[in-house]
Image (tube, rainbow, N blue to C red; front, side, top):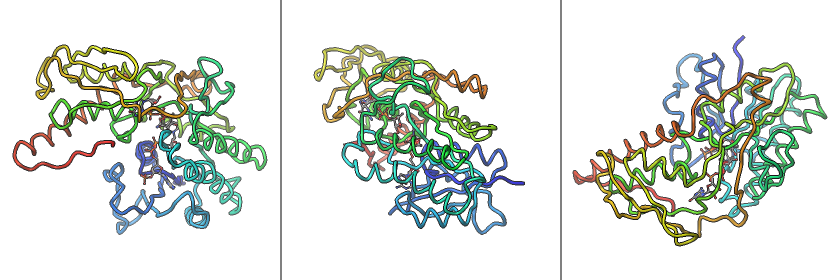
Length: 373
Ligand code: NDP
Ligand code: GDR
């Protein structure tokens, strides 16, 4: 029997990798996409299947986590074996700007999905994965963080995800649902949204290397994170729903680096050596040497990073480090890609894009390059 999966957030970073994985495993994959004024399926266009063909294995439905009737109808039509709730307003800084919307989507959206499953009588058939987060630990109470570390969320995003975490546990306990939380630490890839810190750095410095941008403006570069690769982490999302009994798992690499390290690695990939000068808001990154041909627009002495206080958050999560011991023991899961290798992969893609733009510009076809304002 072909298994059917429904993915909310299929157009996002994780949704795209998970859809690829499930298609490879022979699933019929259904995804919820939002109506937008422009196409928003770039991350899944390469696996798109024409719905006019017989029996397409990937099908998209318009929907939104703020719309109960829409979710109920899609769940009724699809009757999935597995639901992966990846949809969210996922940007921590933006959640301070739009706290109510973030709560509606990230907290209430999870409840809407669980309640629709129950209302349709699917609670004994449909397995449920909730995209929980290391942001739940926030102001950390112990290091490394495990499944039993107390939570102390530090943003409207994290507080909304705390509700989602507990409502998932509650539906498991109250209704016997197979429902799991994956408490995932930061994971990145060349498909990462452009305003998350890793992609902002790889894309920004690649553009600077090619003369398309002048300087990268950053917030708290002392923040410490446990960064993994999205491809490794979605494998674990699937594994969690294949066990005899549901449980919650920390998914992390167990290694920690600073934002400053990530800037240094990216510069290295571009052939640039950097010196960080000054402290606090006046800190800058200056180029001390240039090697190879990847950064023709940069010379020794150039300042390519400055601090802009606008990127500091009202409450910051300074440090996160996960212990994936339970996932290793129960499921045999190990991350395969290091943060350093992931950085190289991200730079390779962003540099290729920047070179294309620079080539067009040099030949009179300048296209605007979007930059976070
Ligand atoms: P992305 O931001 O890349 O993707 C989020 C997805 O949610 C997109 O498909 C987006 O649609 C969709 N979405 C946003 N708002 C709504 C809404 N109102 N209704 C329906 N769908 C919506 O996130 P990631 O792929 O990185 O993360 C996936 C999930 O995992 C998220 O829930 C995130 O909070 C969580 N998480 C992520 C971690 C990470 O490091 N990446 C770590 C821990 C948890 P659109 O494309 O139209 O914007
Ligand atoms: P995070 O990821 O908040 O951990 O949430 P992000 O990449 O946005 O920030 C990581 C750290 O970098 C610091 N930082 C900056 N961040 C951004 N975005 N832009 C900057 O200019 C900048 N300068 C410094 C931040 O302050 C922070 O400390 C991500 C999201 O994917 C969530 O959905 C997910 O739940 C968590 O990871 C785990």
